Image (cartoon, rainbow, N blue to C red; front, side):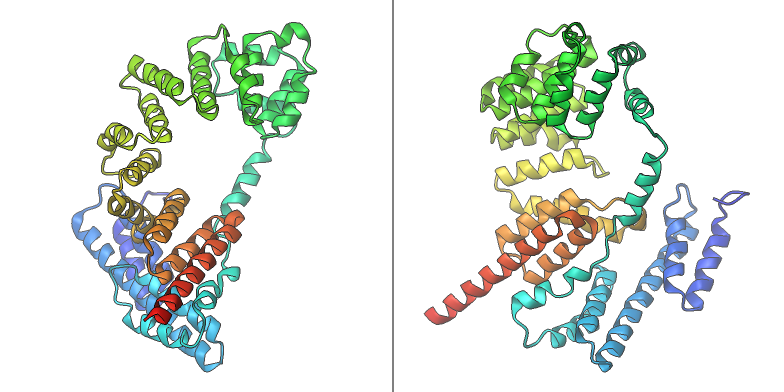
Length: 404
């Protein structure tokens, strides 16, 4: 947004100038900026879509040319990665036959596992910039008092005032709990004066710490009989349901979740929570009946994840695969893909589906590549899954060959 607003005609002209000058990436970004805007005139949108496709085509050709140069220089590994980048840039709407043919030639003579794993260690961390921005934002609140105040902001003012009045011992325990340090939080809760520790709000937070520490029986016991206002009572009920599930008291959990839903049938969160409990108890069709009507034109991860679970439990694997592939591919094919958050949940579920149905290893590898880039802490897990899958396929193929 410039000083005088967004001018679509000027942005379109700029994109076309970038394209004419061979600046494919800059052109793509310019055209995407138009496509991401609301209420654009159709002639401008049509030209922007045309330019967007041309820019991606140019980017794909640049990757193929780079692969050719790397191959001449003897860098076969680099050439393979450039070919794969060209294929990814092409997506499903551009012709990447040349890149696919070159990649097939480059991969001849390698073991399947080696080909699948090659280059995965050098994938850049796509989350680094986001993490750095988050660190900058976290730095704004310094000191326990300031951080405590920030964390209390979502609470009603009377509740926040009560939390502030519980003293520094409670504050320290609360901050440790928010940081995921459940054991240390429980030690801190133990240092709270007895009269303060007996307050229902403090008991609720202590139960939360016990729940995080997987001390499920004690957490459930501490939640019993607490006198809480409606918003905190709702939270306590949800905690009880989760704890009942953990303690393998599924029928009780389901009964409480159903009561929560029936008390407010229009409450989306209550409906999704009830559906999740049903799915946890392997009642796939009942869970699916609840969440499937909630799916609209726009993807909502909280809903889609439950729909996928319902599809899998009812053996509708093709439907699960289609939903997951649409979600993952939409990140790359939509003009807004560069500005959106990669759907790690969908890619993980899709990886499980691919391995279950015996998908082509190259597709599995491409998915793992995206997961490593967007979820680097779990990179080794994804590489191990890929290697195990490819090795299992190789073994099965050899056994079939020997039997033949």
